[in-house]
Length: 376
Image (cartoon, rainbow, N blue to C red; front, top):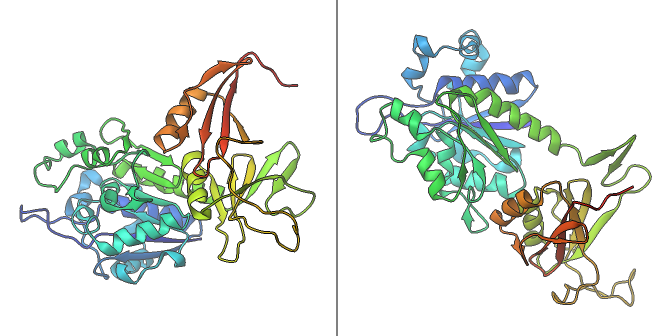
């Protein structure tokens, strides 16, 4: 696994004349979480070379075991002193990216075209991104499908209360909590300085320095989950593509393969396994315990000499996908916040509660929660 870590090059704390930079714990803790997992790490910063260290992060009261380990690790110190230039980094060369915090990123990485483009490239290619403490604020200009990437997502970051304790609310260019909420994110937090991280789809955020370890661990966990395309049911494993037996997938003919793949990824936390190609190959996604193929259609073709595949008449549907859920009200609220178009609110019917979603091509998706109806 290859992980890129991006640090700040900014060393001035606003107009105070005081130094700033990256927070040592937020680099050291994830660095060793990744190294101990056998990850191939690359470090980068806007200017390259040694990133500036916020001296406050190295005060006696802020020491941690990861920081102590870093100070005894010559290889780690050499890697930090020789970061590569951010502008030379490409998302295609890595599996994921992690942004340590400190106040510095609020000035340079948040406004850096290279950083913005890199984060968008990672996310658009189906790869996770992780940011901790002040670095979630770096997402302020990052877009996804024409909207702020964080819009409708559960996130955390350095809180207003924590910034007040630092007495820097009038110094920083923006408050991370306020900025993420302004962009439409669902901001969550714990008490000041308590470890807390959130995973929402492919976005991982950590609240503060104490959250660095959990955010890094969450990223490794997500990467492990994404590394397999199998579903275990009883004693049998179903995979796509199957190595033995068979797996069942739902096939949709769509007008825009990328648009549809992104819809099912964003709304239902689907995982894009392949994105198709310009020759007409479908995109494959895994959604919960099933697979979905989205295809541009067309025809007839040699293997279907009398059949043409086309998008449906949205008002005349003969079949549809059915999603069974444990809590329909929670799913309705979450999926609607992610852009799903519901025909109605959940309605009781036939011993269950139902509602229907219409996807971008007009397909109907039934969402149901059993109440009186039992199976088996």
